[in-house]
Image 1 (cartoon, rainbow, N blue to C red):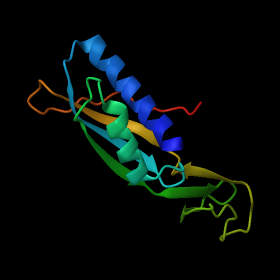
Image 2: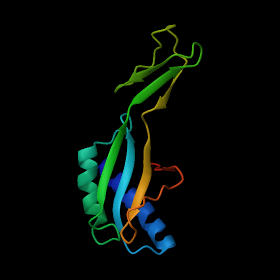
Image 3: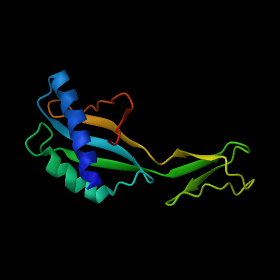
Image 4: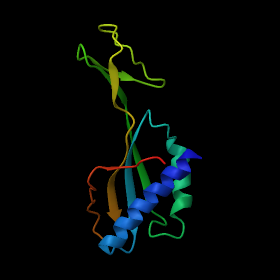
Length: 131
């Protein structure tokens, strides 16, 4: 299951950050998930709970924010929202020299440590890479 590998990667990254900071636990993890990333948020939430068992993340809340798919046309500069499958032909000029500019994100945006007063930690643009 794709979502389980994503959940395990998130847990691993946050656990490593917790160890390096000497944090005893995690209250919440916030993710940005692009609409075109191929991740089902409900399935990810289920897998995240399983992946957290027995780790410093056990009991942590997972919060996700969806990022709309966007495409852009290099020749005419037009941008547009796109869904799945992505519409990669520019309706402005009919060109095919287009690229996805948003919607594939899978990023940890905040981690709330258990022993803090609730102030979020913003990791430096942590992107999850699929293996």
